[in-house]
Length: 146
Image (cartoon, rainbow, N blue to C red; front, side, top):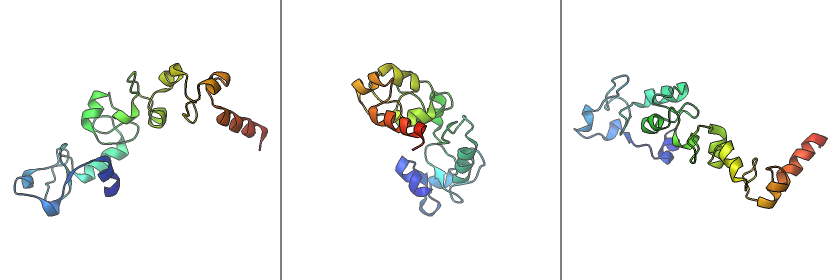
């Protein structure tokens, strides 16, 4: 879990490496101090509360769909993180947006990329009603039972 959060850029106050100023830091939810548990630097939430928030996905401090704990983004995007919201219109469409970067409506309005794989193929997409030739072939094979 620590490696995954390190990649996202989450910075922790570690109990083994705290300065005298950081000893005063405490979790704003449960009240545990920086000497007891790791605490998120900018949010002042301990590691145990972060895990609990990720499981609950409440929409107050953690994203409703993925559980990422980023209170500033959650407030800005009405309960969702930046990765789960369409970059053009701002509507939440978590699964599709994480894959393509846009919601289904905006992606369809562009009309240049395949709805399934996201490959840019303008002529193929126009011919196959929003799907590239490779994905259309896969769908035909599934329907035939191959």
